[in-house]
Image (tube, rainbow over all chains, first blue to last red; front, side, top):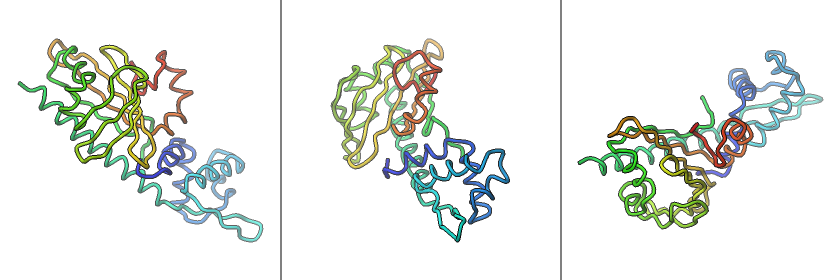
Length: 105
Length: 131
């Protein structure tokens, strides 16, 4: 991996509900856990857990505002993860091309 | 963005009968014709060594699983990078052709989904592709 955080990114995005949370933040910007939960079939507590996982993967940021906490997407680690997929896939395309040529007679 | 356990997956059909395809995955001299410039690890379970790419990158490698005729799984890591699992799985197409499926996944992701994988597969190893 290019970035030690990229594994955490893949893990964070492997959960379908977390992907919905990411989508809500991407489409609507800064949101509270309650606002996200209102649009999803899960509890506010469950959304808060997913937001914690996203923060640990570097994909979200929490900003206290009075008694509320607003969450924003910080998508840079996602770009790192996509770059890793692209580079790793290209390396395998090269290797498998050599393998196929080596087996031609 | 669709993410699942096969983070990077490639599938090719080789013009090789299964025995020749297996040799290409396990004979270091043959591996050096395609996988990397230098393959300094024996393909047997538990073996450790290094695999040096054409660009000079030296990866530490551990052979995680060898299922004769069927699958080789390696764990490798370049300096300063997270380890990944590489799984090479063969599947005969006909007498003259063999399908090769390559999956490369960060170890962190394999750990995250390993309970599900182990539950769904009788094999000991990472078994990213159903055998």
